[in-house]
Image (cartoon, rainbow, N blue to C red; front, top):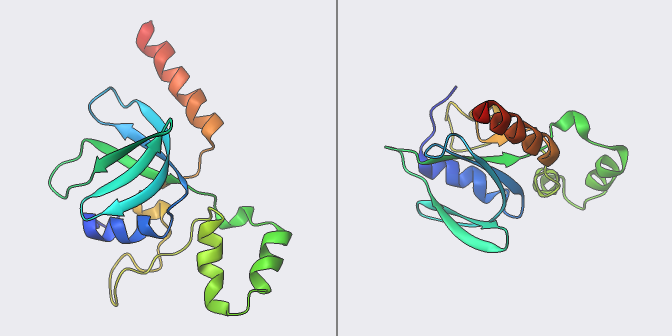
Length: 147
């Protein structure tokens, strides 16, 4: 996996504002929380969790949590979505449209960057699970811990 900096992660996350995310705490036994990405700043993501906005700090030197976008692989594109994308007035609008619809798209960070053309999931910044699958996985973890 390519190591990307916090600044590069923010470039990627900025293209998916409005999408759901899963936050895995590295301090609380890997507890996972679902939220919605609302914004970014120099070193943090603004995430709405249960209608409360929280800044989740990102840092190159230490991690208190992992944040991943809940995206869909391109193989889940439907004919109506493809038709809408093809009808956009400018071809350059297609990628932002697919991102807005929650699909994992190849990234561009900077000319010559080793992460260019990789999907967000390949950079460990996206998760293809559904919210139901995440909740189910968390319940399995709780059962194992309580035994």
